[in-house]
Length: 400
Image (cartoon, rainbow, N blue to C red; front, side, top):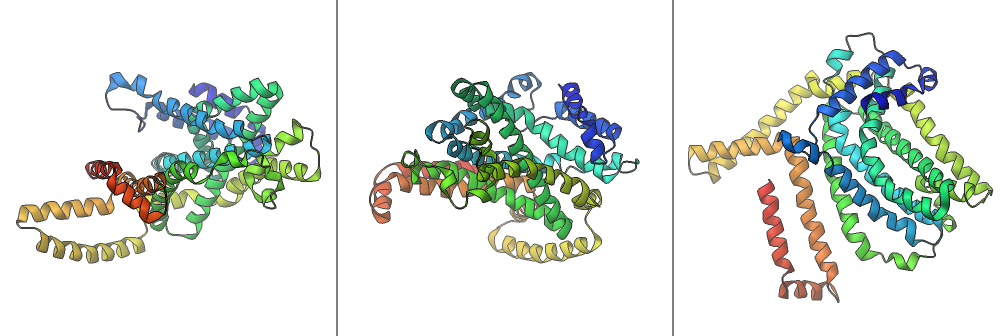
């Protein structure tokens, strides 16, 4: 599989030369990175070697189920362009969430810099290799995700609809990858490495809660049956929404609607990813890897400021531990947990979203009732749904 993916990328050597990327260096870096990916245990896998083979298929199965759910948007709307707009909007958000979740482990993994940077490899080649690595890294998840909708369109609209849909998926993937990279690289250019890492961490937390809330609450708030006959092109904001650009390829090519608005949005759908490729490779790649190294090391000024900040927090921690703990052993345990929860990124990424999910579940149960807010709260108190909230909160505490 690794050899096939590398050959697929290197079949575009003319494009990489146009972007002034060294093809030999690019091939060597991608081969090494993809080989390492095959040896990395993902979050869906367990440490037991005999279970790794089966666990590797779990994320593929989950993304296939999500693909079935999002196929609902393609089937419910009478206007195909409107359905595809909603589909690709949801698809791009979900894909961006996956990209952000893996960003720390893939793109911000600076350990390979200790090997690559001492060699005569330019920043542009390294940056393009990172972007392509992310694309190939997520390719195995995208295939099961888009398969249900692709099969449906193949059956309903024929071979031409199938290939146009695949083109739209490719443009969506390129758009999300390069927009997220542009955003992150831009933040890295204007902020300190330490601050950048904190921003990414909290962005992951907020984004996870937001996606979970949209998944549970939107079906309760919006009745999609009321919009079955809606047409997205009638909206004044349609020409400014990227998913609409991508969806506009369908009426232009399949339905033969060749008006100016469809041509304009289709051109935007094709040109935007190409412009993003140029900006990442030619503009934001400058001094990018030095910034990436600084994320792991930190500057002297940041280190001094971090020490002062930690000293202030430690004084608060020691004062609380002296007031709340009855023995020295208890005090040591309190202070150890305080420092661990304050510094551990993994702890924050695992626990903080769970706290936000409790709030989402509370709102979800409120929407289940009838009448005004006070009547729904009273109804929840008289039933058993509050017990679910208690048990779920207990599970979050156990997870912490």
